[in-house]
Amino acid sequence: MESTEERTLRMEIPPCYVTASAGIVYDGLEGLNGWVLLPTANNWLYWEGTIDLSGYSREMKTFYPALGFIQEGPYWNCFDGSGQTVVTIVSSIPLDPLQVGLQVLSNNGGPGFLDSNLAATGGAQQNWETVLFCETQVNLINANLPGLGICQPITNKQSGSLSATATDTLYVMKFVAPTTLPSGIGIDLNIPASRVIVSGTFGIEPDVEYMMRLKRSVELANQV
Image (cartoon, rainbow, N blue to C red; front, side, top):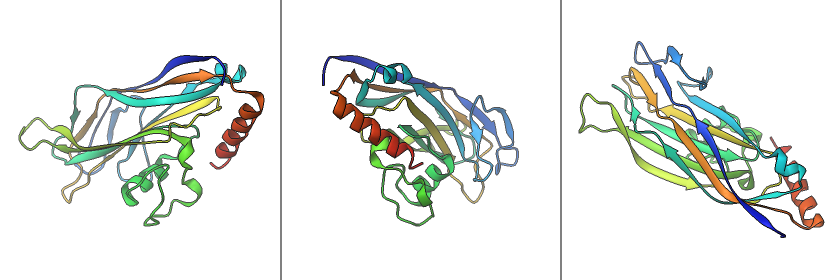
């Protein structure tokens, strides 16, 4: 690899506030703020964005991720519910939020992991290389702070390949599923603003290596 330049890529994700008048289904959606409520799932929410790398792609540069992490606003909040499962993903191919939810919640895995086949995910299971960075977090309401509805993480796991890529676009998704109890999901959900950061370098490879990497990127994209 020839000369390299360090870069920090970031994606800003807005906060979201939704309410459930009966504590069962989110129907107060004025505060979606760019988020989407999945119509075919049980109160699953997601946000999508892209990071444009086309300028580097035109210069035939390869991106070599080194690390990824998430910065997040002050708190998660949910009254009368239980908690949430949260997944944040940076990938080199677009992902289906419904399939992401099935992979994480039903199969105890996620994009880039093997499928346990407890719930059908079909051809949507991703190759490990396409998932550059992923973080999965489970929150529960802090019972020691009654009346505040503050949720705290009880588990936080990272995965991803940090694989070099010649793609011209990175795809960012944040997926949130409330924990459903017999009494319902609670009367509201307040998702904090967050920021996904991926640091790495851009470099120019010898022509043969670059063309093979570009070919591989196209092959993986066509598996969507």
